[in-house]
Length: 123
Length: 67
Image 1 (tube, each protein chain N blue to C red):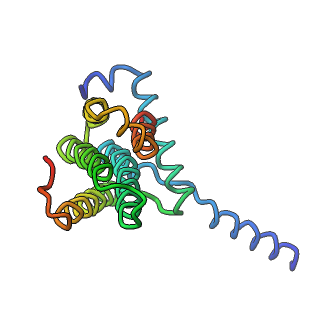
Image 2 (image 1 turned 180 degrees about the vertical axis):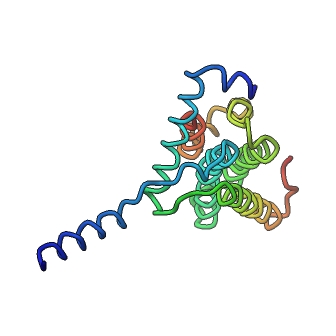
């Protein structure tokens, strides 16, 4: 009896720890919103890192402005097109990046690469 | 578009695979079962926060917020 109770308790604990996700609650629109959220989170992380580095005098105003301008343009695309943002966001991002002088691109490359990576990873 | 999804089994299967991967990943990270309303709210909150941080940076520098 005690052994049975232990087994039932163990099984209950396992099922509580790993219940199956209810996929029926996520509509295609919800899925698209979640994908957009993933990109926006990364862009916002870059924004935070840039502002922090600029405050610590580790990143110049000019370079911070360059990154944050691109961040805003990507956010604007997603805000306007939460359903089909990826293709346009990639184009906007690449155009903005390529318009920058080579030395600026090199200086802020670590920030830009994070945005490039997440835009290419989202499915 | 809606008709194409339901007449092409491969497209539909791909859609469900992507959906399952997203939901499983979110569940693994947070333990939350994502609803449509939660996903929509998460996106709106993140966008609002991001735009606000960027705007405040430019305002603090006395610069116009970029278009």
